[in-house]
Amino acid sequence: MAFSATLAAQFSDCPLEYTANLLGGKWKIKLIWTIYEAKNIRFNQLKRELDGITDMMLTKILKELVAEDIICRTQFNEIPPHVEYSLTETGLKLVQSLSAIREWTKEQQEKKE
Image 1: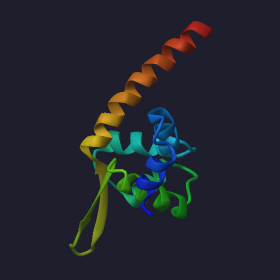
Image 2: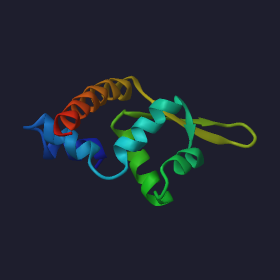
Image 3: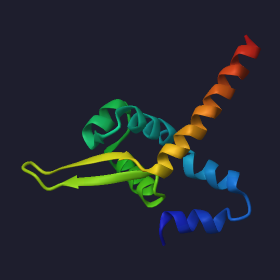
Image 4: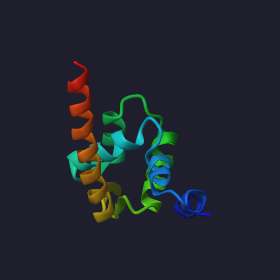
C-alpha cells in the first residue's frame, strides 16, 4: 500500500493529524527546506546538508515525499547518470505554509524573551 494511502486512511478525519504525521520526525522538514533553498539537489549533496542522516533514512524519506507528490525525482540518463530532487507545486505550497508557521514561531519566541 502506498504511503499516502496509508496516511490518508489512518487520519481521514483530521487534516492536521495527517499533516503532522506526514511531516513528523527529525528530518522531513529540514529536508523539504533544504530542497526548497537549493531548487534542485542531488542525493549526496542533500546528505551532506543533512549532517547525520543515514543513506537508508534519506532514501526512505525521499520515497515517502515523492509518493505524497511533495518532491519530484528526476533521473538524467547521461554519462554518468544522476538523479536530482526538487519540489513539486504541492511541495512549494507546503513551503508557503511552513513559512507562515516559521513566522508564528518567531513571534512566540520573541514573546518569551
